[in-house]
Length: 628
Image: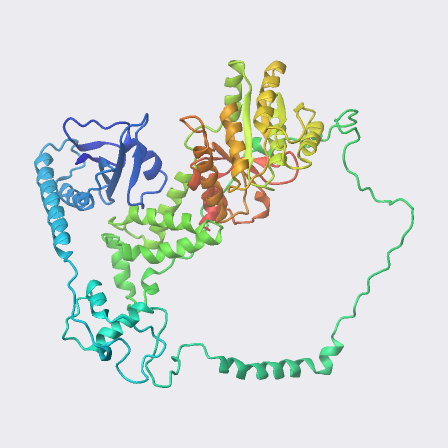
């Protein structure tokens, strides 16, 4: 039973709705669809599943667009029902409603009767289809037993060698059971040919008596014939006297000098002081200037000129139209965009995104979403398909990368300070991405805004992790809470937060061990740390160099945190910190892949080795680079 069918504009104005009497929807499935699917450029998917809170009902939502009129049609039904006619009903409603739609009207009461008629017709067709499928499932009829001379492979003496031949005498029964639909009067050669081709799909046999391989098959004799030619050519090329003269002189390795004299070059660059950080001589971080987080990056708003791709010439076998007809079409501007028109431009755009290090799965979904939003639209005057697709993709990328909530950490820190508690940030991620280094950069930025910071060394797994964080704390002159190694990181973090409350610290930066997304024990320990301490912000630290693995990392981190959580509302990743952004040139696709798969915004970007090399993500610059 259909629960609800809703028609609204892209601006959010509800034009018409149908709801089953006495069945009130639990939760807000349509709002969840708009927020999680349509606004996040996932509209190319076929359906959306919604689980109502507090153990309520589960719904499946399907939708359709009328891009030319800017309308959205959404159908809601319970997931357990598996209604087969919903897609057909949405198409019929879209077709009929477009005939009576008027942008000046807001009420369509006369559509109630039309919808009831469409629903009855769709349900009747679905019932007929179900009955016809049941009637087509006829019971297997035992066929006539074949003799030995009629078995597979018996036609001809040397033909079809190497093909598996049926050994049982009930081959006729097996063939009739498979529902091939072959009559007994068919020739045995045809029947056996079908049987053999279905049994061995990967082997192609020509049927010659001597078993000669196919023309396109691999021939070893050709390879053996080519070997002496290659060898002679290499000998001829390498035997000349000129080549030997041009050979560079071999550099011999110098003998090592063993002596007890101390090296003149300085090898230890650490600050003087003992291992606990006492006897500090100077402070390096105070001389590094203003953090890049507080500097505005100016990007030119003028888009760079790009070569327009001619869609018509990309299609093979089509005749190129003259300049007059193409100019007339561009002036008229009444061509309706079809999927076949969009495919060449979308394929070129997908390849461009993948060269910028966007994961293939994300690029495919983005192109499908853009195609769903453009299909059926009328092409504007003096515009080409490639430029229209480019503009739609640019709007989609801006919508994805723009944060959906406030990422002003300083405001949240002051709000937590007014409540008398520290603001806790947990840094998580895989091994070797730079969690400790970028934690120190965030601490330096907070210190510049007169925020008291304390570090918590909760990486009790990796050797040297506590010493590394202790060095950063000594250089920044901030306190650090540590308990050594082989301790429970969740307990260490809780004691650090309690210590910050006693010392009136504003922010606690929790460093955690690097872990792969498939490491079950470490992921369980991370989930325990987050659930026990309930931090204000969970930052995922990821490399900007990562490609397709970004999808696997983010999705599995979120999945593990949700599965291993002991509370109903599991804490997932709240934000992303991209590191090594200065090493990727224009390969900025990792930012798009991470934001698309997790829905979390990029809050920091690490772009260097000093404490000041931390900045905000410039969304317009990223979009411009992706489409360049």
